[in-house]
Length: 133
Length: 130
Length: 100
Image 1 (cartoon, each protein chain N blue to C red):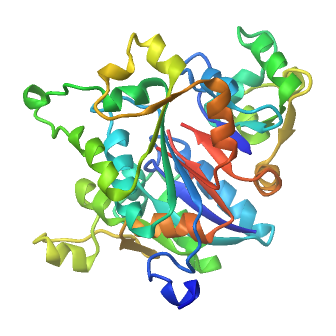
Image 2 (image 1 turned 135 degrees about the vertical axis):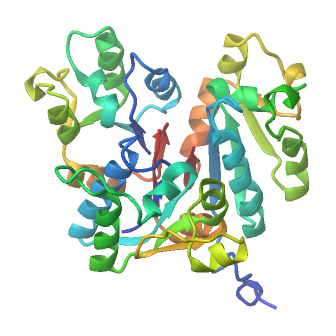
């Protein structure tokens, strides 16, 4: 059976592109963190090559210990732990953004790869489609 | 070249929808193809037919409808974002027990998969937001 | 790659982050409130001049005009384009990254 016959309806031609989701905004103050995560989850069905990148206040999205009871909003941070099940495993964090905020990898809810500026420059250049929120 | 456009903000509050419109129009006038315009986050609010903006300023919703008609564009409003913000077509309204619908002509409501597909099928995805 | 920046450098850190993470050789376009960064005599002028060493930098003319910014007072080396030029930049420079 050749690959073309295995085209799934969603994928549209069996083409695989690299998709980069750029997350620069803190959670809860605005909806972008939550709704961008929803795109990632739905997008998983399309079996593209997905990378999530957390820069600036985006690193706060994956901060441990979020407790939203008093603001009465849904705590969606556990969803980042489920990404693995959706084959989204490339989670990269900007080192400068972490340091600027006094955070380390230990403060984060999921395992990530911390990248420096040069690595992120190269990462971005390598992507086909970049989604910003 | 084949473009897809993502609009993250609603009409008037941010310039995003205006810039997206001007870009889309310029691309079409140059003979490029627009695969889809996908409205996400507050961008779904570009798809309500109930706006009554001041007469002496541009009518953002109508402008999208008209461009859509002129060039047979696929203007898609994300269903999840629309449900959160109260944008519905007749089917959605019925399905969710609402007593009215408000989708503007030329727009259709569909899933987030349409955004991913827009990214896969186009050669360029251009995002307009805050 | 084409990077677009749509916020004023005095309002958000978007421009700073974009300039730090945009690889040498990529193209930068200032749009909407981002056009203020293109003007001479601002706190970010030296940052923009430095950016020009590694990037072609453009500014969206319609947004300059709208804001009463004098195109002749744009930092030397930054080129002004209209919406058609924006489209051409997107076509010529590969994926577009919108810094929001």
